[in-house]
Image (tube, rainbow, N blue to C red; front, side):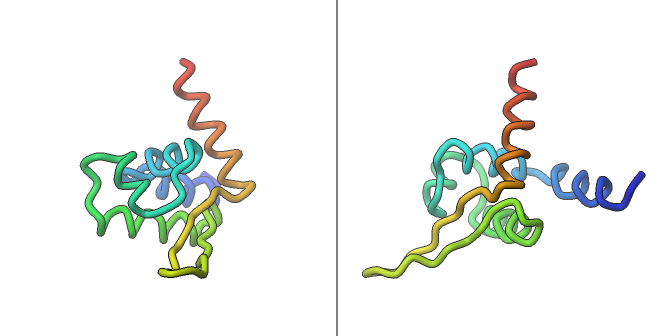
Length: 92
């Protein structure tokens, strides 16, 4: 198995990863929006998944200035392609 495929499978098989990608593709951008979209996920696990997805180039994290400043997450091009594949699994 190619190392890239092994790495992708390792990331996607972790609990809450595909659900986090789906939530992001469905409009969740802030941490608490993800929490509302993913009942049962702990804050620690969600934070870890978002960090892992950012490191893999699937989501990007942006600090938004304001009072108070906040963080928003969005799918990258790679993430949108992956989200389309995840959505395709729902059709079958």
